[in-house]
Picture (cartoon, rainbow, N blue to C red):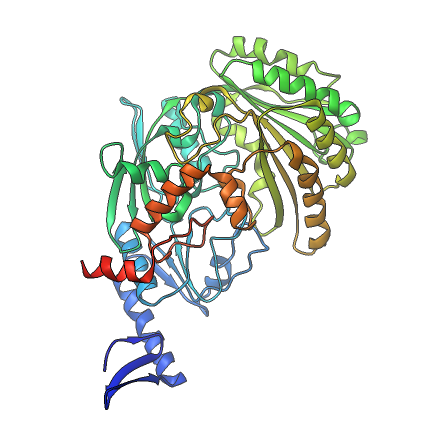
Length: 498
């Protein structure tokens, strides 16, 4: 009898190959035995259906991704990750990898497969003299900011504190200091990762350099990152916050904003929000629930100079609220705390733009005004600065020449009408299509293969496919914005036998 796999076995009799199908009882016994072996090999925790923790642990940030995995492995170190990867490969299980769980597409969970949960891997080692750090993937960006703050250091990252280090650091990292210090991947010096064959590798400019290139923007296609080595930059006190204007002159405000933000020094990174004013104490009661334009700012550098640079953005009209003030960098995450709420349904689309033409701004404002509701959040971000001064082929993230990016989102409790939320998101997205060019992998929902192609220029995509063929030819890591391998079964057999 030859190898047994997924409840079947092959054997030879009278020169013919026969397939023997295991009974349900045998399958159940084999499954339970396999899970017991897995549990015995890991130092972390194996959570199965029936475990009191299962219901909470199976859930992710986007409530639309309501998966019921067969098992969740809460890893505590790289060895646990290796064991879990080998198990998923040997059992031919669908594999999801979860860091912070913020995947808009819900890739951090699945139905009937294995979830590798990295959220317990939170070790962070800081070298304040050389301005470097080693981060494990389960840390969140809020945690990283707080740990670095006492040293007056920071690491440019995403906007929302609860986003995990792992997913963002493989996708790019467009955040509060993008114009001053570039993408998060631009601070990356090395990655430790477990590949599909269960090997622990280190990728850097000197070790596996082509893999290192692909990991900076290629997402989770080539393995599970278990640690990141990064260069830090100054942090400390920033001039941060937001100023809110009535949206009656939204087009004019956005036109002036985009010009000012694009011409600002690199120390200033900004983002505009188009939304209904929240029922917050800093919004006058008669303005709550009315359309507003909010300009969020983060200036890193001399505060008095920052006040001068930011001043024009605070004078575009008569503000209904101005919250801009010096603050410790970690406090700026309070501006996006609504994005941390777990379990809401999220409908989002995003696009890069080469320029902000008057026609594009008109289309944005008109379409957003036509769908605006308490669930609506449309953000426009002016890019450039340090991010744009890295060669487009230096990393797998290639949209460095884009002047800006728009994210259209509708989010609400699961009880809200999902079809309506999605339709309103798509309406704004379609209105902007004539002016768009490219997509950001970190903001993609489940949008199909063509949209993944829009993330990467052809030459970049072909290099990523070559890496996929080398490090994950069977596409074990496919619960992501997937780069599909092109290796054939014959090629795989040759590779294994050699």
